Image: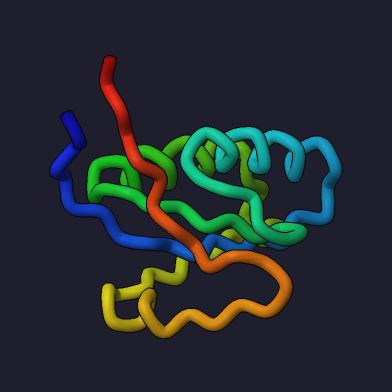
Length: 97
């Protein structure tokens, strides 16, 4: 049975100069989406997941030094994503066995 919760595609970019903090942020983001380029993830998130992710990331960031940006894409914009060299972002299918 598929999960019917509404999700939004977020493109999440980060700029973190410290290797240790950057690695921690990368690991957190890996649990929510797909690493598509250096310092860039694509995540399909429910509103609840978005809030949880932000809270988890804030624990690892140094204010004034680190930056994480969330770019939500509406369904129309998502359909207009153009990619050269790799596939477009696709929401993973959830299968419960």
